[in-house]
Image (cartoon, rainbow, N blue to C red; front, side, top):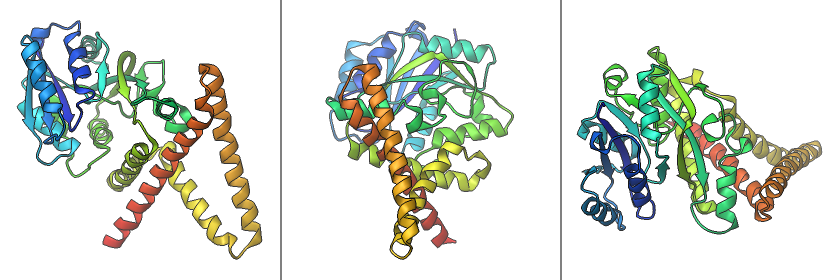
Length: 331
């Protein structure tokens, strides 16, 4: 069987890095043909100690740590790729847990030529305790929160524009290059854009499954989605044709609210428009929250899911607009 390298960017992940390594040990793929290369950005918590303890207890699995002084995800991925030796590369996150057949299914899909980069769906779990953490996890898998990002909820295999935690042959790097280190976020999407531009396919199979731990509180969620929106615009400047409807809606929504607020000071009719837009949005979010609360028998979702989705929309949209303004000043 071909050698497989699991490449993992990591920084201060003491709570979940052990879960990831434990899940890798449980893979159905021969452990002798696996290696784990972790690019650590000088973690200040117990991440490295957890990894060291794991290495002592599981000498049969090759686990190596390489330095990532830049402390950015694309730089970490590139450092891990350069240090790896496998014929196949699988990108994972330190706060994820692949199912036991994850590696085997990725390799099978690649060897069947279903795509140059293949991946699966996330089973999203709360990153903490309490109704807020549960609501964030639910919102991160809801179409109102993530649009048509199929890897968060689909049950059908097929060609897509991107996948998380992609698996690909090492030779693909020779064709399209390494991850773009000038993008601090959206590096996976940009990498997949280059694959598609080179004539390659991106394949998503819902049978390839991994658990992803969502953010534990609204502040962390806002920071995450602001970063997503900010760097999405930077990527779209290079590839404007890759814009999807789900990505355009948040900045337009935030911009429309800002304009209506300003116009409301001078134009009474704008106040009606503002109230109508906010009212429709709030009602839509509340209905989504109530529906999930009933389905899952979790009353906390009724209020928590609307809060989480709104946090995602406003943070993403605001980050996008800030990036637009900053970029225009540099022109």
